[in-house]
Image 1 (cartoon, rainbow, N blue to C red):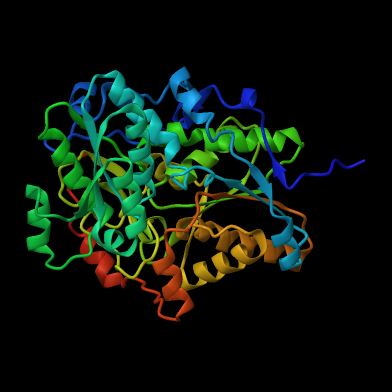
Image 2 (tube, rainbow, N blue to C red):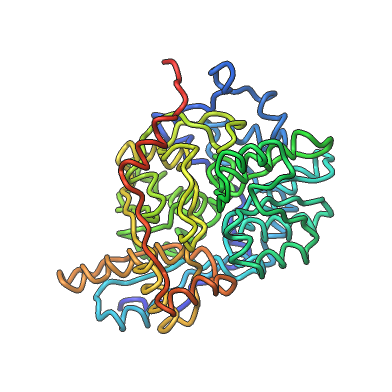
Length: 457
């Protein structure tokens, strides 16, 4: 008799992962190393430790250790909201009339509203353990800023957040959550930092970008004694912490002997996607299983589908290390009309290398179609999804509709990274018919990538 799958698959507390998984350890061809922009040599632990906490710098540079123990203090914090549920989307399946089985890993069941808390508490913990006074960071849509402000409040650390200007203005309630938890929030680019003043002079009236905000946060960190910079996406250390998502997802599927066929995640910098797919990609790398993995990015910021694979600065101000990644150029600033947080000019080096090796595919989608999918999902599944997550929802629906045409009973799994209850300006624009689809021209992208740094070798 076939085992019936419940609406929500919950793991027990004792089943929560005790280790993070480092997918780089199973990669025969590793992601290219971070480079010191001045010497163009692989960056050293001491150099990286001037910007990041030393333990986080170690994690960033380690591509051989497959598992890292999760400290008990972090696991105890995780227990407040983890394990998170894997949900069978029965109502969505019925609405679509598809034979596909759709599952989503819901990461919005905490006050931060997203998956970002998984890494925020880890990074704040290592900062506290090192004896630091506080941390600086950037945030796009505000999910990472909220998560970090929560983690810092819990550990009594100062938190300084540079928030992309258009999001600072469009998402005031997310900003106020950060301030409620004690964080200082500054719209970026600002006039408070040297790099911010330079960006404002070069791009008058700019709405900002994650690349701009990163530059300001790094400058703020290195110019204050007892502070370090922390980042919510892109970096290998972040994908490591976010592997709890994929590890729990796989454990929940295994509990009911379900084998995923297609795994879908939204992709901006790579934190959610990388965390969700890591253990599944690990199986592929070891020859144990195969999956169809799809990264979904906005058509307004299409780093994987239209970018180039090259070394680039991680920030607009060109103060960070060089990373080899699929990039649109560090000077590329997405249109302010884009409603989500997937506004980073490049993709995680790890995700980029996996993509280059053909272990995943990528699609770009326009935001009006994304919000149509979000609206359908909200009506039938009862959760108002974040705009970022809705990119994955759009493609999950597309894949389920293909199954309706072919009659295939595929198991489709996607990451629901968080909720959209503070994204109501975007939903208002969609409901009022004012939302626009912006797609950069080939000329715009060509101009941005023409300014990539020249790296020897």
